[in-house]
Amino acid sequence: MTTWHWVRHGPTHEKSFVGWRDVPADLSDTALIGRVRAHLPEDAVVVSSDLIRSVATADALSAPHHTRLPHEPDLREIDFGVWDGMHFDAVAARDPELSRTFWEKPGDIRAPEGESWNQTMARVSAVVDRLNAAHPQGDIIAVAHFGVILTQVQRALHVSAYEAMSHKIDNISVTTLQHLGNERWDVARINHLP
Image (cartoon, rainbow, N blue to C red; front, top):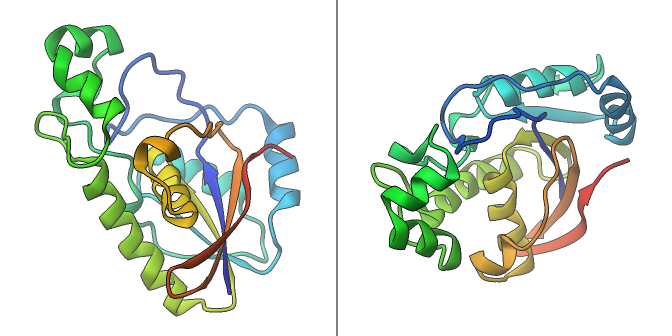
């Protein structure tokens, strides 16, 4: 059994779409970071997306006994394409039907020059499958993004993307999913803040 401890990166305080843009995380809540670090397993590997907000959060959570894996570009947030950096109201004004459908019927709908939920799910799941094979009895601390974590919640719960998106994933929260083999998963907790 591989146990995944998904941690959402620290807050960015952005008031716009943030996908592949490289914006820093606010890691000033050292008390929360300390509690999360203490909650995470000692004998674990740590992996993060290659975006600075995830890398810096993984650095803050890593302990000397953790093994750091190379950053994974395929653990990046959804690519919002031309929407990245735009305020939500501006996106709704620019693409009213598309932006509503993107959230209400996630799946194959893509942001202009971006990617769909299903494309994100496929690239993230490929990383998860590879690391499950490499660490079949291990703990993996994965520091990533809201959408990335929810793709794996969807996979573990065997629900629709829309249902998965109903879950809240706070910054620096821990979502624990256990891979039991094949496509069997157990959801231990979602959005845990120690």
